[in-house]
Amino acid sequence: MIETQSLCVSLGGAQVVHDIDLTVERGRLTALVGPNGAGKSTLLAALGRLVPPAAGAIRVDGTEIGRIPSPDLARRLAILRQNAVIAPRLSVADLVGFGRYPHSGGRLTAQDHDIVRDCLADLDLTDLAGRYLDTVSGGQRQRALIAMTLAQTPDALLLDEPLNNLDLSHVRRVMAVARARAETGAAVAVVLHDLTVAARHADHIVALKSGRVFASGPPEEVVTPEILSALYDTPLEVHDIAGKRVVLTV
Image (tube, rainbow, N blue to C red; front, side, top):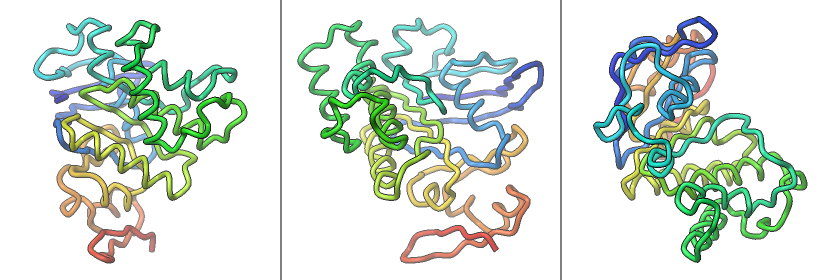
């Protein structure tokens, strides 16, 4: 579990996250939503100890995150960043294998290879395992990065806009994999722009605006026309179709 208390984060001298109290619970998929510049990615980076807090606290399973040794944290927490820079002449399988580094130190065991193989299959990458990253599409690279993150087999999984460049079938697959990790006990937080996807797959939604929590709760409480229209400063409609909430612009 990841908890924050009165968390504030500054970038470039400007405070962009303000007084956030948040819990990313084990066994639950938490979606972070909100307009551009709301602080979603910055908050996720802070949860992954990629940017330091300006004030407040972050705890992982009750331990202040700054007190956890880096090798231990890498085995317990994995984060997918936006626009990750990767070497083009790596194969897809080699990239996914990097996810096992915190466990194997670069010398993959038979168990590590099994985990890599499973993650490739989970993200529909088995047939691309031997391809170099500069020979696959943007969506295929994105899935390889997600597979690498999954290969860390973390207790906490943080995904920043994992659906970028993905087609509809792989959007569904990635969200199913994320949900499966939550259902097996991981604490999962995902930054999403598609509100319909968030409503369909998340157990808990945290809506951010101007660096603050604007609304928080289960999808049926947050995904409403009143809350979303105020969140995005534009009229939005919410409809129930086949038992699922669908968000439409007016």
